[in-house]
Amino acid sequence: MASDFVPFGLTVCGLSELCNFGGGKVSHVLSILDPEMTEPSEFGDYGEHERLELRFHDVIEPTRGQIAPERSDVERILAFGRDLLAEPVDCRHLLVHCHAGVSRSTAALTMILAQARPDLPAADAVGTVVGIRAQTWPNLRMIEFADDILGRNGDLVAAVRQRHRTLGKQRPELVQFMIDNGRIREVEDLID
Image (cartoon, one colour):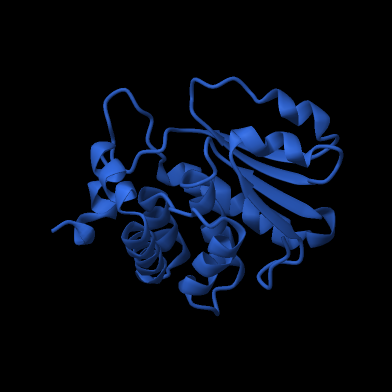
């Protein structure tokens, strides 16, 4: 999908959808995998492409037995985004994926877009990602790091928290899911 933010196509997806983008449709991939996952075999059908692979779990707090996203991971995502914008003719289409295409990947694309257009409110970046992926629920920990690195003064965090509120009201079962999975900070203002 095209965007007003960047001069190349954008896709967000989960592992089960990777098979839909082979055959040279994608020139760049930002791949966020659980640490224990093997590399998806679908990338063999992608042809030549640039890829950044990161490995951490979809958590927002340090959690025993889980590897949380760290500031250095967010710095690598933002560097990847800067490189794409520096040479946009080399990038025809960016695909960002995680396990389900809901949290880590949408956080990554949101921060890349916010970095690309610091002149626009962060809510515009979030809205663009929602337009690409309706079930967008960006990982708050990743967004907090990005907000700080990009000097957004809370604008990026506020936009993502608003997205959490909106989707949480539309789909209350997600609120309980987040509570059950240690992500209460993302839904604390939706709890009675």
